[in-house]
Image (cartoon, rainbow, N blue to C red; front, side):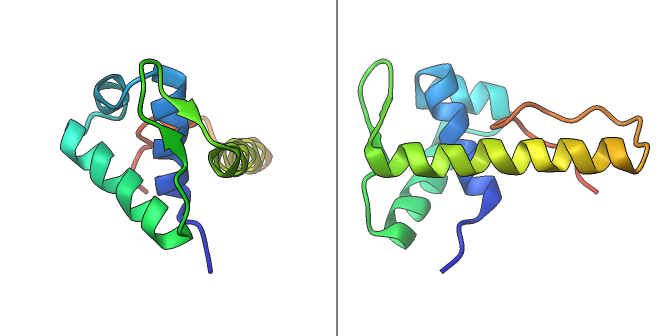
Length: 99
């Protein structure tokens, strides 16, 4: 089983922003798309990842997924610096530029 980094970044955005609506604005997608990404990730992993409250709170399983999202973002940033990219990287959970 693999965790899709885009889905993990969406979860990080939900927690960082506090609500699905706020995460949708940060990611520049609809609230429905954020909800669908979260649902997909939870179904794939068979675990509830976030307590849907205001603000949204991670479950223990959700904490592990967000930790992964943050590590992937740091690795990507390091790789871009290593290849001399001048393109700024987006924060974890935000919409990233298309290749």
